[in-house]
Amino acid sequence: MTGQPQSESHSFLMPMLAVLTGLAFFSAMDAVMKDLSISIGVYNAMLWRYVAGVFLMSALYFRRPRKWPSRAAMRLYLIRSVLITIMAFLFFWGLVRVPLAEGVALSFIAPLLALYLAAVLLKERIGKATILASLLGIVGVLVIVLGKMEGDFGPDAQWGVAAILLSATAYAYNLVLQRQMALIAAPIEIAFYQNILVFVCLLPFAPFLAVIPDTGHWPVMGGAAALATVSLLAVTWGYARAEAQYLVSLEYSAFIWAAILGWYFFNEAVTWMTVAGTILIVAGCLLVAWRRPRKAEFVEAAVG
Image 1 (spheres, rainbow, N blue to C red):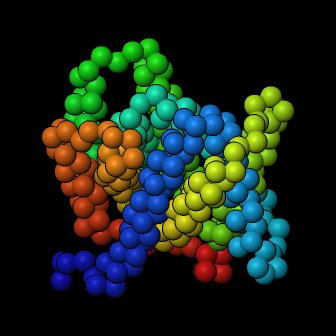
Image 2 (cartoon, rainbow, N blue to C red; image 1 turned 30 degrees about the vertical axis):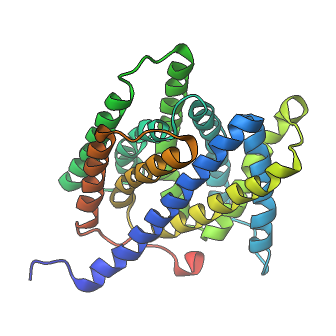
């Protein structure tokens, strides 16, 4: 029998759906953070969102007694938190200067880089279908970006594009770290320490940059923290159960949400080139989903 076994197909379907759901929530968080960054500045939007995230994750994390993380896990948490601090600041700084859909499209260089980082760092085999799916996604992104950039881009937008591309390079390594962490720790533990440690990374700049937001901003920041938490839990759960190379191409689905949210909240037009690029991106995602991935090995006690 040459078809994909039903049990194996089902074992990959749930991680795929979890990651797609997480990415949808993450895209919504991007839209909220863009709005906050315009209103109160990138640093304050990040700082107070992580304050809200620390309270939210503490309530979830301390529901039952917890052991101190292993040295290996703590090392990954520290590395990833520093990376996320830099990556997120660059991304949101750039997002203030370019449309939401364009910013997300530019960030799609990350999954392509992550495929090869996963091969080097995680010893995962890169199949031809995975490369083809990634290239389809990249071509889709190029179509979208070319359509968006036909107009006159001033220096401010150019710096925004550069910041997002630098952020995407860091995000590629973050995707690999995400997979490594998912194999040794539970999603709630990962989300808790990420919020705590990123907040610690931001704290030294508070005396110079921090401003107490208006009361009207707090529900929005709480919403951003909740969206980020649900996203992180869902994506981490998925990465614990399937190889990174079969999931990173799903990152391209975030553009669909970015286009919708950018149009709805920021009045950003969606052109025919955007639609054409999105079709290519979805084709890449489906190509990966239809392959026969090897289920990831993980410690049940850690992720359950």
